[in-house]
Image 1 (tube, one colour):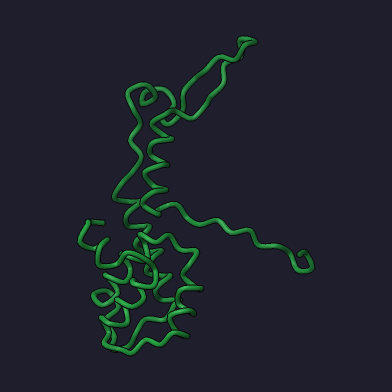
Image 2 (tube, rainbow, N blue to C red):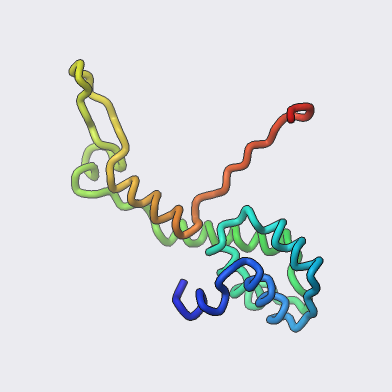
Length: 142
């Protein structure tokens, strides 16, 4: 994002407030807490972008539900991932893109992730573009 948006929407509560303000709907503390709780696992840069895009993309007169905001975050994540594909460096481009060949102490060649791959993943992580992995426990496990 840019610094103007970051200053205008610095945190999740401000993003939710912005969303309700854009739709000219009142926001009470309980609704704010519910939206905050349900969106807390979504990377903030995506929530920030979703509340800015919601009035344009979701052409309707009422505030989007939590599910609609989450779905819009997923759409934005996919669009941004498609717009920023992995580009391997000169070292790994021609052999194994994203991988580097290394030789261990016993003379065995192994593949390890190239530094360009780690840099790309760091870029995705800081932009909130990596999907959030949650572990679902089977019933009965605590």
